[in-house]
Length: 362
Image (tube, rainbow, N blue to C red; front, top):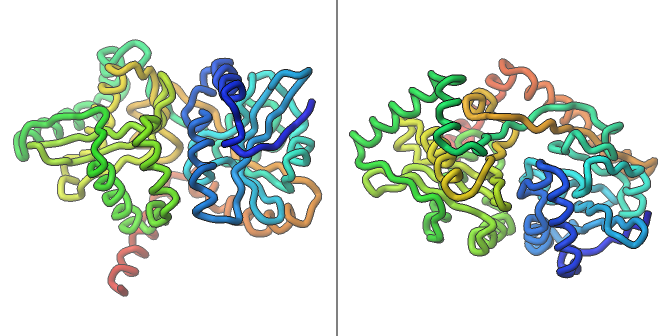
């Protein structure tokens, strides 16, 4: 096989068409994070955010035909990550499920010393020997329509469903009529969501993604082009919660949910998720990938799961050694927290306490 490395912007209509055709070879490949629009968008804005990182695509050809696309980021010392690392909930090759490449040979062809991953499609044979941990990503299944989805939710998570509908009625009584807009084109709605999300990151001690101008520009770009869908929940005409997700045909990837903390007692995020399911089902979306994390909240919504993996592929280079020393201890600690609900809750409390103390210091 032959591997050519190009910038996303160098891909022509024929290559993009082939990319889309390969996405149709497996149900999980249709995820928006694996769509060409995501790689093209990150490739356009990521370099402006950090000139030391290149967004590239390995184009794998077999007998003159493109067999796979391998989107990746390459930094100093040949350290590689998935495109949009830290922002993406699904990663991997865009290729048929039965394709098996030599992972280290692929890295060598792409000029990488190491490539790490944390949301890799676990079923892909190429990287299977390099998994260290496997987890799952929950998915809302809307293929039978919203009525069937809600009926299944009543059966499998009755308490969650009753709570959401009760709080939605209470929100309507206390604040005003509850309405939902599936796709808002208003830039002010997007700016409001990003402000809410930045406040959430600060309150919970997380890194504020919207403090990075290139991420703001990327999200605005996806909103303008329609690859991103901004949904808004209102009560009495006032915005209460919002969600910005990415859409590729019939698949939505949840990305940035946020809400106005003044309405926190009504659980507006959970109301918004149920309304999002209804809006998606009514607009040709058959499933919503919810991303890893927040397991207790998402359990009541899921219809199926996508197996995903963490790990790294490394060649015998100095860059790979430096990467291991920096990342391995942190990854082990993070994995232990994610796999233990008690540790997860304790870590969450510690981060929130840190955020409060930091706020007082300021």
